[in-house]
Image 1: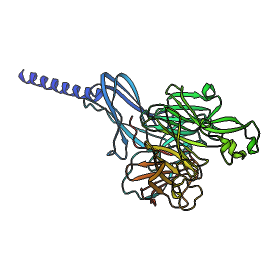
Image 2: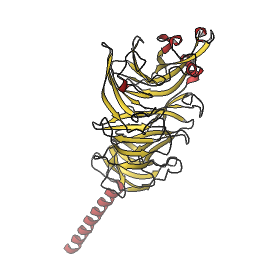
Image 3: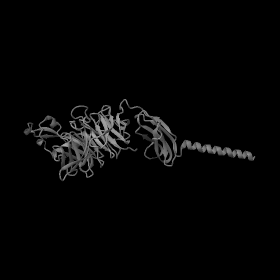
Image 4: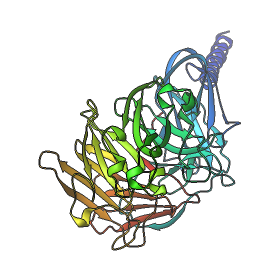
Length: 466
């Protein structure tokens, strides 16, 4: 009898132990179901589905199956019941593994999936040179008008994120604060004004449309054409550069009393798509006083502004390509405070005059990074210049000059960006090159990427967390 009772107790203990282990394996604490599959609409996204029996805080760990030591983690989420999250920034044609980890330490089983190739519509860049002494983390944002995509590459040129844009992305900028992409779309494919856009679109990392504005429906833009810029501002607003058509009496210049001159300005749009501020160059400059205004080419594109940014004091900075000038505009009064350039109100020394200025990025009030495309390709290639202006003395110094070797330049578009404390990114649009250099005055090219498509700009993004 005692032996039978002992045997029964042993069996009961074993059954209890097995049941407890099976429960743990099947539910993993509060995780009752877990699955992952590749997105049916995007080759570089994976959909993670899970069910939680109680309110649970969790994150998702994921890694290339061949490199289990290089684990990435999403943000921490909270959910009860069924939920779905999307994994982003995945390399094409790659096997991945992923796992759910709760705040309590419960771990799901490991699931696997495989991304698909995107080479057919978004080929990777070609890495032509690699001499960086330290690895640079981050992403590179570009656009492709031909296949109608915006996309992110890793720092080696591999496409890791993309989003189709049906009405053609002509210009794209990324805002790291909102983690959204700002685009000008619906621009003509040829002609003089290939950056004149019909729409503004803002999307998030999942491709969700958060704002769309058709410029033809905005009363303040009835005599304007938005072009070249849709810059997210530090205060959450959006800066848009505009062409403005104005009837001008050019009879003293050999024209008529009612000639049309196309000048420039900008508008500020809030997050709801409403225009809150307008500025026009015609309120501050007289085209009749412009020496070459009688030229049809100049009348059709007198200023050719191409970028705008805002400083911490609320003032704006524009770059104008016709005369390669950097302008500062008082954000409160609209006063055109100065124009830095060979023919401007503040003139740099001859060596620091730019030829094909583009893409102002404010470093501090009166201190602005620009690219000098150096389109004449005389003594150097394109240059990164920081213009530091003293408005009181009306002088400008250049604390930073980084010049590419002669032959490395872009005739149009392009941008530069400072990376960390040691590196500079050059995006040379017309030659389809992205270069990373040191910060020497005579730059040493340390990484060279050749892109498959002409782009407007390439923006460096240090980190994306989702």
